Structures are given as C-alpha cells and as structure tokens.
Length: 416
Image (tube, rainbow, N blue to C red):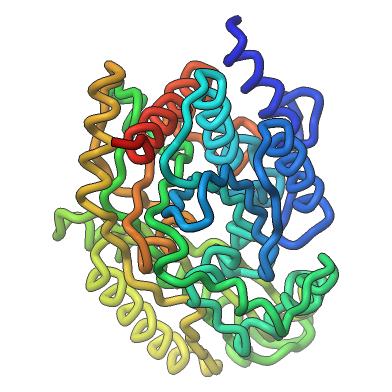
C-alpha cells in the first residue's frame, strides 16, 4: 500500500471516530449531536495537520481554508460527516476525505494555487433526525427558513433551535452564515454514488448533471380509538385500515408513471407512526411520510396530486379525517454545464472512464448551485448499497476521486 492509500485509510477511520471501518451496527451521527461534533473535531485536527486555517460559521459548518490572498477568489470543495441511523461510514465522509487528500497531494508536490481553496464540512446534511435535510448548506445560501424550522422536533421532542444551541451556537445568529455571491467562485462535491450505474457500466467516475430534489408529504389520519374486542367490525373508524392501502397506491402510481415517461421517478412511504400503538386498542391516529423524487418536477407534482386525491377518497370511504401536508417541495437542480465538462476533461486526462448521470439522492451541492457554479462527482459504491452498515467503496475509488479533485483544483487555481 502506497503512502496516499495508507493516509486515506487512516483518515477515513479518524473522520468516522473509529479504529476500524468494520462496525456491525454502522455509524449513527445525527445532525447537531455530540457524535457529529466529535467527527467535526477530527476534521479540524486533520485540516490543522495540513496547515489549513479552521473556523466554524454561525450555522455550525466547519471550514478549512488554504488561504493565499484575502482578495483572491475562493474555490470550495467538501461534503458532510453526519449519518443516518446505523448508516455507513462512506456517505458524505468520502467527500470530506478526498477534498483533504487533494490538498495534501497539492502541498506534497509544492504546488502554490493562485486562488484560495476551502474545504467545507457541512453540518446536518441528512434528514434522519428532523426530517429536514441540508441545514448547513441552506444556511450558506440564504435558503434557511428559520422561523418555520425553529419548532421542528426530533423523535425525542428536541427542537432544531434547541439542538443548535446545545452545540454552543446561537439560533438567532444562524442566518448570518449566509455568504455573498462574491465570497465563493464555485463549489464541487464528491460523494459515493449510492447506486449501481458506475459498477454495472465499469465506469470509474460519475459526473452528475441533475439532482432530484424531493417532494415530501406528511399524511395524517384521525379515526377513533376503541376496544379491539368489543367494537364490531362495521362500527369502526380504524385510522390504520383507512390509510394502509395508500402504501401500495404510492408504489403502483410510481411504477405507472415510469411506464409512461422516460424520466425516472421514485416514491416511497418511508415513515409510519401509529397511535396509541397498543395491542388491544383500535388505531386512532396514523402518520405516514412519503418521499417523491425525480429530476422532472412536473412528474413529482403529478404524483403528489394523485396521492392527495386518493386520500380524499379514503377519507370518505372509511369516515376518517385525512390531512396531507407538504413538508418539503424543492425544485430539482441542473448543475453547471461548464464545470461538468471540465470534470470530464480532467478524468480523461487521468485515464479514468466516466458516466454522465443524474442523482436520485439530494446533496449539499444542490443548494450551493442556487448561488455558484457547481459540480458533483460520484465514485462507485459496492452493489449500490448505502445508508446501512454494509456501505463500502474500495480505497482505489477513494484515490481516484482525490486525484480528480486534485487535478481539477490545480487546473482551476494555477496562475498564468
């Protein structure tokens, strides 16, 4: 194993706050928790070893900057270190790791950039804790809806506002993390693919052109609790029975749309809460969370409307009350064409095969793209597995990704 491979393997473990990556239960570093903060401390440590200047912004994002000239443009790279519940140690982490490795390689060959280079470690990218994703990058681009978010709670009733302040930050200052358009020149993120296109097409690198931001719906059904043994079947207002067919409906409607349209759409009933959740009580309240994604916004909206219409039918049929709320409704993103082509050119120079593709998963870059030219690079992950302990990518893929970032940064920052 050469020095770079060994360095990246060691730092991968450090960023995951572990001695070995083979952890049976995976990693749980939810946004704005002490576990995420511990990983951020490792990021600060590694960045300091590379001679970078560290600071934390008002939202909690960590920055590591190779500053050449305060008046020079700044190119940013990076990703996130938080995870889902029992997630893998590569999602997000590899983007931070490869960004740091790219700077290490540039410094090792004594390259002096003509622009500043910043590595951003975004806070709370995953929606696992609060149902709201990419909080840190939303703050950077000024898309954080502070008033609406303040009272959003996690499963333990802790609000986002409280979680932010528990990290030693000031909620009232969080909007001050917003950057002006001139504060950055561009942003590039690297991530594991979370799919099998690269593996199935024997491609080394994926170059992303579109990101399918989600519509997320919350469906709440209110019926009537009663005794399971004494309430006749024809006199019930069972909230669970009323809404259970929606699960199959969402799946079948998504399949139908995919048969009729060329642009893929996916939809998932991914959360369910039943009350009072007792064996001898008829369910009186059910809440379902539905995630809809496509790079075609019209297809997402079409399915969301079909779901709302179906819920009205279930309401009448089962004599329950159904409300459908849009938790998230974000338009999908097309990334910068010039950046995309430059990344393809870098891969060609390095002898790496590429595949141009869309991303079904959201990433911090989708927010950054609203303000700056942006690119997104994918490296393969084994069998497309992500968001669980078996998530994995080989060291060779990490090195390839780091080399793409290194060469891209060198090309973009070299002086004439």
